[in-house]
Length: 129
Image: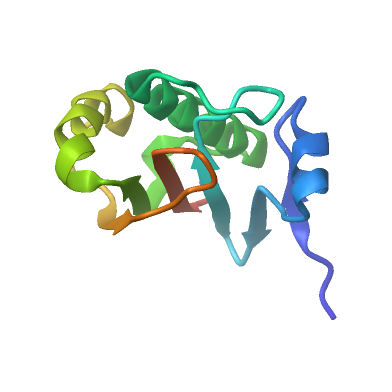
C-alpha cells in the first residue's frame, strides 16, 4: 500500500485524529481536501451562518496553504448546504470574498438534511503549482 501524503493544518491535528480522517491528501500533483465546516478550534460550530461560512473557507485556506497552494489553484468545488432553499442566498453573499476572479472552478452544490450540527461544508480538489 502507498503511504498517503497527508496535509495537516497547524493547530488542528488533534481534531482530525479524534474524528479519524485526513484533512487533505497530496497525490499525483493534486490536493484532495476533505469537507471543511465552520468549526472553531475545539470543533464546535460557529453559531451564525455567515460566520460559519467564513470559518469554513478560512479552515479550507489553511489546509491549502499548508499543502503549498491557494484557492486560486482549486479546480473543483463541492458544497453541501442544509436547507439550501433558505440559506443559499445568504451563503452566496459570502462566497465572492474567497472565490477570486473568473475563470472560477467547477462547482457542485448539494442540499442535505444533516451536517453534524453545521449548515455548510466545502470540499475541493486543487492542482499543485
